[in-house]
Picture 1 (spheres, rainbow, N blue to C red):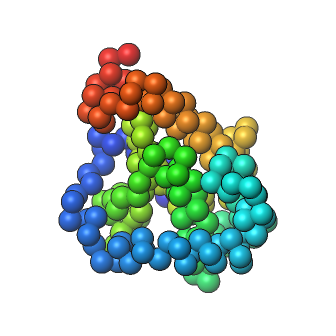
Picture 2 (cartoon, helix red, strand yellow):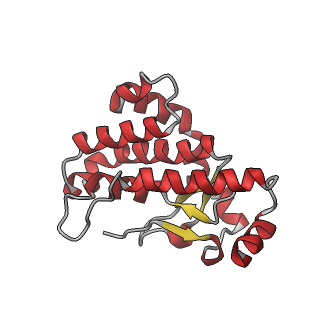
Picture 3 (cartoon, rainbow, N blue to C red):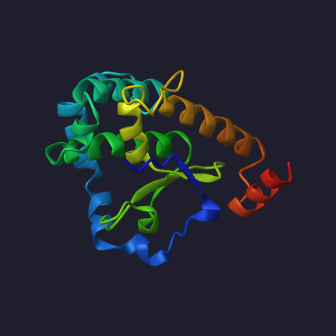
Length: 187
């Protein structure tokens, strides 16, 4: 299992051409359909929340995924890839909506054999988030011998970390990434 938590932006290369890759653009354009299916078929408990795009929505989605996919084999089973993609897409979209984020394609960070790799950049957070990998880890954390569970779950910890960075960035009047990174490195 390839575990990608977050990758520092300095270690990533976001090539402009990758953002126009046809398969990635097709994936992006399928968001509304994927979310409709996610809320109706995969995670109606998330849809029932007043605002699903919150930490509560994220935690409910992870709990639902853990019920649906009991182990790593289920997470990587070919017949479950579409559902896992919808769960991962939801995870990423929570960060996009809560923290002035946006999707980007970083295929250089993808597992072997993957042509595009959706990641999320959030305002004030100096690393890109790999929502699909995060979701896969969250589903199996604590269930595998060499992958212990984070106290509140890996995605709760990530949400809290991004939220702290985001609030500091907003308080600093949303400086550019270069200015923010320099300030963070100096502190």
